[in-house]
Image (cartoon, rainbow over all chains, first blue to last red; front, side, top):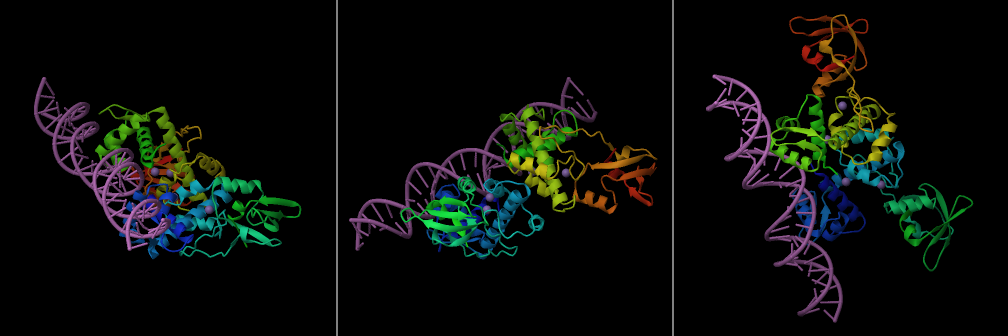
Length: 217
Length: 217
DNA sequence: CTAAAAATTTAGGCTGGCCTAAATTTTTAT
DNA sequence: ATAAAAATTTAGGCCAGCCTAAATTTTTAG
Ligand SMILES: [Mn+2]
Ligand SMILES: [Mn+2]
Ligand SMILES: [Mn+2]
Ligand SMILES: [Mn+2]
């Protein structure tokens, strides 16, 4: 049985590892968990003792199979709860992260099974992230960044890579909604910002910073 | 902001206080929280420092207004989550206590408001316990125990005073369902057990131990 | 190849929540 | 009224998870 803290570390290691290759560093973990490197080292020793990570001093860290299984389980719960909060309780996608951060730790297998059924076995969370399967597979989506699209292309907005309230509210404001199809009408050669056409009349300005954090297919 | 542990103590103090009069004792708290008296004393000092309880050494403990407000807030959350688990996820009333014990600590006012709306502003939890109002009033029900009913009376089963899985499953087994109307057909003079008629044909034996824990009106 | 910089770990310490054993206060029984 | 019993508190200590400061290892730059 893991504590909240251990579960959060596993999830964070998973997320950092999936954004790079090779080992995850102590400092990166310290930044993500808003703690100090010394505290991370303490925790890494504990997780290594429990064989949830591979850890050699000074060499960074990698999840074991069991560690990855657990991490995916937490991520599954997190995303299912986010779907619940948005679809059933009517929260905005910019409001649900912190609640899901707590709900993901509720200890009951059966609860997750029933929640999943209640929600109709959703494939994606409100941010477009795929929900890991009950058996612990993370679906690979193969999306591209909007910033990599070319002028003239029509793409579908699929997911966000940044989950901050500010970013999500900015998207709300710009009518950039997941699932909608947009056409790249112009790419500014100087600042790489993008003009996209939504529907027939509406044209929206998307800065490079924003376009880099929007996944499309 | 209170920790899980502090919230659990407040709730426990409230529950014990409502089953008696006067101050709640250290030993009673130790038993309910499955800790030792010395640990309770530690926590009482902390809660007293936060002015959530009135506490004089050796004299037992009583909630302050603020402490009671908080306790009722936790109880409200607990009972709303139990309704969710039973009505929406289809859990049995004997399965939900431990999950609600964790869910009650999720920190979000808005979550409780929306959950309440989603559930249709329920008045009672699956065990027949009234749900405190958003403003912190605990509805007074004025039920009697089935063991206090007299032969010939027809009463409605309203709530249980005991929440153990064993007790609730025993009621399931005996077809003693909240909301149903039963007629007391016979009270055994020797062991105070009760025979009740459910509907037209079915007669059920109810031991005194069970009848004492069934509330009726 | 070496010295400085950066990253990481170790040492030692703190708080919350728990424990046992011992001391103290209150209650109960004679 | 007093002594024994029961209840409670105090003393001292443990573990999880965090911290700062100091030591160590690895990386980078000249
Ligand atoms: Mn979390
Ligand atoms: Mn999400
Ligand atoms: Mn609880
Ligand atoms: Mn209940």
